[in-house]
Length: 302
Image: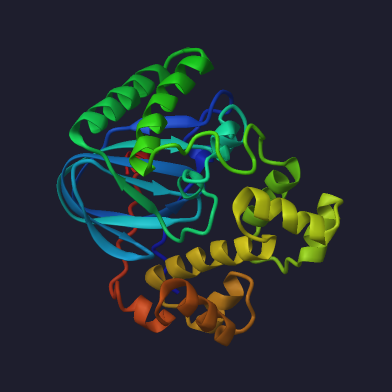
């Protein structure tokens, strides 16, 4: 088997204590290998040109674009020419703790990893808003390496998120069914279990047993905070992993299905066609030559 996938993990990025927030300012020329990660990434295009590849295909990026990639999403940059980014990287626990109230926004749901939007979210900022976001992220970057108070970091982060909120549309804060509520601990714990082993033979009944709630209550909680049932959420994460394996390995569909927890390749084909709009074979031909794996420890600059 050839496996050129790269998983970027929060354990190698965030400090053991303090807020899981990180900002970097990479400059890309040429290709950036296909990779995926277990944290939320907000990539702000400051200048330059390039193409961005995700499960939804390849799209050009331009100055002012903001790409939001949730945990489990994969992406790559191609044909870059002086592509300057401001990457803001967040752990899920920031949005489940001090910024939990942001999840009360229906319009922000796809941006924050909730709702039924598939693939990365892309918004565009005008020149003035882009400048304000860059200033906020640069201030956050300056303070992240010091001993700044958490409130200082959160303040700069909120300025950037406020600009993104306005780009998504007016009147989105303070609406929705879960205003001023942090995600339910049952949902947080269940997501952690699922992410810890996507290929396990999970069932709704087993998840409910582990959470010490009824299956129907677990479904209601999940729909309330994610827009999906637990098994729907799990299927989406598995399909993202299928996409990575299709593009970065030469494994057959049966083997890939087993690696993500499905025993039947036919089931994989049906689910993947519904998710990506094409068969796994057609999708694999999108990137016939797997990107070369980079061994540098400087991966956080992607």
